[in-house]
Amino acid sequence: MRFPGHTAWRRLREWQDAGVWDRLHQLVLDELSNIDELDCTRGCIDAVSVRSKRGAS
Image 1 (cartoon, rainbow, N blue to C red):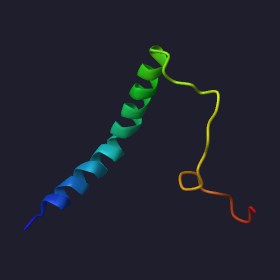
Image 2 (image 1 turned 135 degrees about the vertical axis):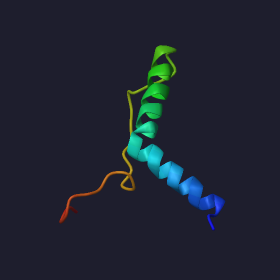
Image 3 (image 1 turned 135 degrees about the horizontal axis):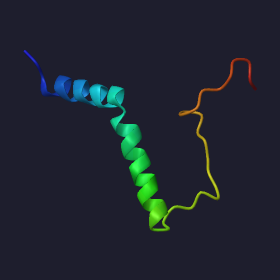
Image 4 (image 1 turned 30 degrees about the vertical axis):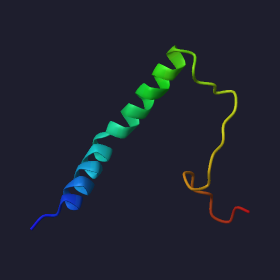
């Protein structure tokens, strides 16, 4: 028996593998830039999304 959650996770994984989220992210950034609603003069990188090098302090 398949549960709805399994189908959702499988589809999300398939979309990730197909690059859907990366393309969607780029489309949103492009659209915001086109209507002058995107300010890239400042930014922040969170350690959750960027792995630190081994031995880095």
